[in-house]
Image 1 (cartoon, rainbow, N blue to C red):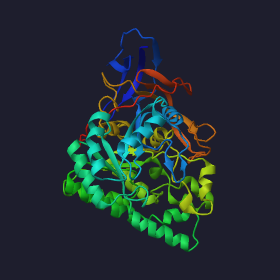
Image 2: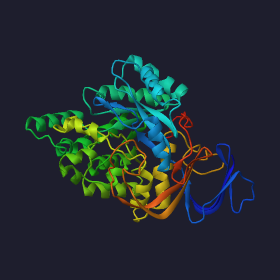
Image 3: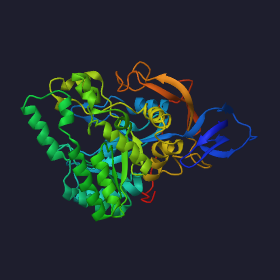
Image 4: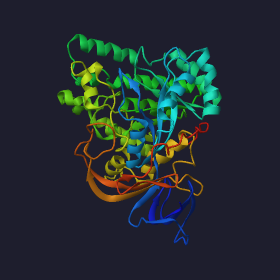
Length: 460
């Protein structure tokens, strides 16, 4: 069906103007003033913002972790994302140590194929780099459209690889035109501090935070930037949280190095005082943990300075009964936080509405930069003729309250319960189909497509 969106204020990473948008099939066919075109449906967007569908490049759906699985399936997670204005997510495949990358891909495909409501892609997390997995990199880039590879500098004994493996992976990924993502925290130091606190009987959620001090992230970020500088491989730090880690990136720019940086919505607006809520603090147990107020100020500044290119979520929800697995030991609390539905509205409310960022910067970090960095632009991440018709119609003035009672994520609490938000997603199009309208999802599971991605452009 063709759709004509009339009189909306169109916002991209660079533009801000009032016009009409005509979509036909899966793409945008025309943009202009007072378009005189027949359409199957006309949507009046007067007084509304119209921007590209959000892209969340950091989510974990149905992920096996700490003896359980994250509680959002590919169906519930991508549907909740659509309700929040996110039309595309990138999930992480976790290689099992001792197994090939291909077997991990097949395992994740079994969970995701024909189950997604919104569009999706994968990063490949490499937990065992050897001569066999080395040969799989090119196949994944060129034949599967998976062009980003994650490494963990933490979770020792499960996901962590050492610096020798990291260097080898970087050199191979660079040759194949890919990108290295990293969870940059010092796993050995964190392991030591966890054992120390447990040995002292300090078992509340607060000690999750105290076991991962800022220095563990700052040191690992510095080491990662040095390794990417040496190898010349494009590097992307996921969920960066703090001043010390961002200063490592600032230092890298002094030698003309480009390092991509992602933060997450929670690190911009929540802080470590939540861990003092005794066991309720388990709701916010994630890695890295929430930080301090001064780190929030650094991250907002980093967005405006162009040092932080992306705001994601690291959405990895666990129901309260799952969090209770760590009731008597913080080290057994499943790490993760639900936010896939809240990112776009919170970032607008706390960022644009409060004057911290511009509308153009909002679209840049939530939509356009993820598409550019991960090889999907201009198909995704912008509103332009020929681009996928992934479009959000947004009321900038509507006030509402976030709550587990009204969200669509498969989790029985909210990390933002009672949060007053200005700005609400009203209508969402995904590849030319109305996905969300009148607070209802009109798409069925299976509509979401796997998006093959192009090789990385390190010049954005």
